[in-house]
Image 1: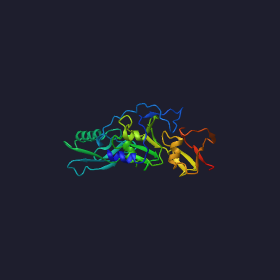
Image 2: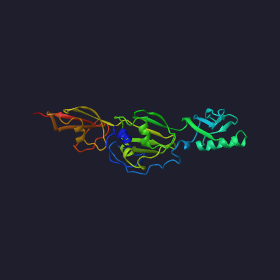
Image 3: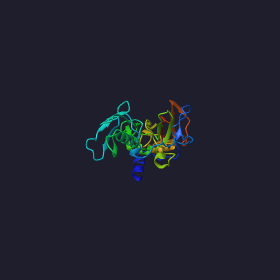
Image 4: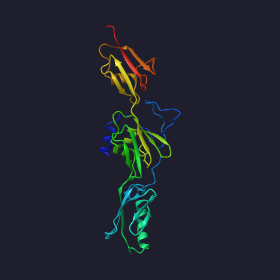
Amino acid sequence: MGALLALILGVVPAAAQSAARPINRASPVAPVAAPAATPAAPAPAAAATDDGYVLGAGDVVEVSVLGREEFHPRVQVQVDGTIQLPYLHSVKAANLTVIQFREQVNKLLRDGGFYTDPVVNVAVVSYASRYVTVLGEFGNPGLVPVDRVYRVSEILARAGGAKPSAADDILLRRADGKEFRLPVTDVARGGAAEDPYVQPGDKLFLAAAPIFYVYGQVGAPGAYKVERGMTIRMALARSGGLTQRGSAGKISVYRNGQKVKATMDMPLTENDTIFVGERFF
């Protein structure tokens, strides 16, 4: 667990904890805001073992009968949900767990008179039907097979963690369309409510972090990530502070193309531009 936390936390800023939050599309979340928390979706009803995996089209399984070399096929579940086995021909496999499929094959072999008391083993060789889609600012975005029950933190770790350019929140979209925002630090440090289970068909999206710009009489002008709760004072500190020629009385903030009246403790927002002027003497 310590290694998992180190992988995740090594690439994201610290933030206050909160539970998973359903998205309200009518009022977008500002990059520095922390909306009220609501419970995350419950865990899926599935065993956290290979035997609890539900087979589907594209999965490759190896079916064997102990002591019978003639019955040891490696086959793929077809688009119609069946696989082809010796003696039995077409056998339903889709939507059955590994245990259920194993018991079905055992029964068919006995009832057909092929073996008196077969000891059947089923192993999943390739997981293809059940996966989570991981997109955005992950180290290794792509398709992550879910061969057992996984939490968001585990998928985050398997996907290479979050890039330094990543935003603070992961967007979890369920197959039924429900969406949740999960702060990365809460996923790493929180309990079950902050680190929900993923389900096959879920999507995880990690957007690029909002940025601000600073130039003029500062130590390191440039573009920087807007951290949660960041103020103008903190932004100036992040950019190296004022130079000896910089004037605290000549700090201008431009937001949406307009100059705004700013104070040092004013919250920063995405795409803000800060300019620090030069003192006269």
